[in-house]
Length: 212
Image 1: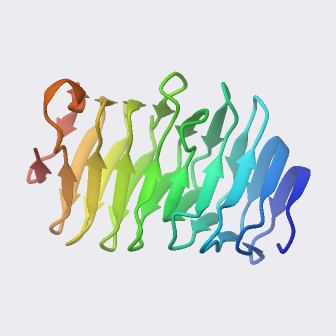
Image 2: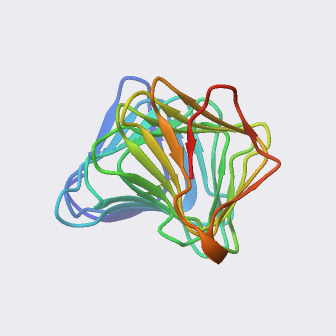
């Protein structure tokens, strides 16, 4: 993709690849992506956005969206609307998801697995639903969970491998589900006082490393 476009919906077939070059954006106006292949956002110096608009925004399929190793790459929603990522689909890499606009329902997997952090920043009103989904830091990556409520019932928040870190940032509220670390990974809650993260009905699995 070497131009910025608005389209109604997007489909990527298995074995196919769609690359977003630096600074070029796509707005999916009807909000539906059916991805069984690979979508790669490769921004470096300028924001490179995939925006899902509409009240029924959804990412379906068994494919992968990869956000390249830069804060420039972003998956965005619209105010008051929720993006749903279906089971079987994966978002991975760096950059950000939501950028404090809209909410997200994750039934698939989101993985921070590059040297630049991946930040999830749902709007504090719309929040983030990880029921039955997985949020993971892996391959020495860092996953930042910014302020808001993360409903994690039947879901999992994980850090796997040395150098992999999940940061529970200020005013984040984790409700239900599991916090799990393996292989030297860490889940960190480093903020004290009124803004400290809240763990509500969460299970820290045996042997996990929660740093406060």
